[in-house]
Amino acid sequence: MLGVPDAYHLPSEPGGGYLKANTDEMVQFRAAYVSGPPKAIKRQVETAADGSPAAPVRISAFTAAPVLIEEPEEVEGIEEAVPAEGAAEGAPPEKRSTFDLAVERMSQSGMSAHQVWLPPLEIPPTLDELMGELVVSYELGLHSPSWRAVHPLTVPLGIVDVPLEQRRDTLTVDLSGAAGHLAIVGGPLSGKSTLARTLVAALSLRHTPLEVQFFVIDFGGSFSGMRDLPHIAGLATRTEADIVRPAGPMTATATSFSSSTESAPYAATSNHSKPRSS
Image 1: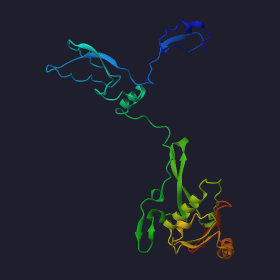
Image 2: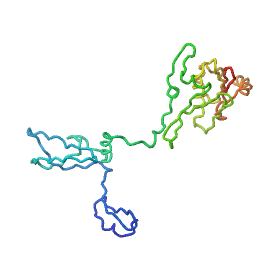
Image 3: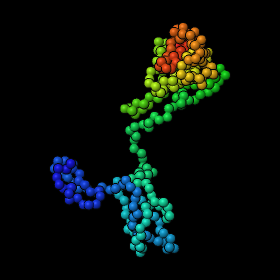
Image 4: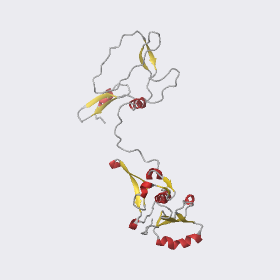
């Protein structure tokens, strides 16, 4: 609110207004409309000696350096309404706004400004992206050489976004020694089973079946596609009560992790010289 009746005297053309910078001064302005398609413009239509249209108007980049202005030669011509630049005769009318056209032209020149925010994490990274190059050998099978050089039972699970520091780190979990306990907690469809499968797959790429085995009690059917994984020593579903009951003492002695009561509790053991569990 201006608090004065000056707006009543503004011209009737769209775009006029007052800018109140402080309590005493107001600046009258007229804003440019850039939200709609550009209108047809009028310019001098010049022709070459052979009657063909002359070269299009050259657009120079705006800089702080001095610009040499060349005096144009006087050429007789007629004023004619022509469409916006790039529109050919018979082509459909331009639907992009003037603002969009200006941004498109400016995006093709100059250096990009520093991006304050990193692109959003829309697509989850795959394990081969997190673990680097995967190779196959006779002794180790499919594995990650770079992560085998890391401490045992340490694997990546995802990416951590740190927006205040404009960086992203790899989310890793170390299940060796006293840190070999993990609980996955979340609401329905929040990704609990996906994280559990990612952990099993990552440990399988880090260790051989002789080093790590998994005993899985799958209440929701999330591990049905991993039944043939060599690292899974046992897989029991909700309907296999005879298999689930003997697994009780096994999961009690080993460290287990569960996503929720509706998903399965899982357990893994390690055959390193010093017993470790995940």
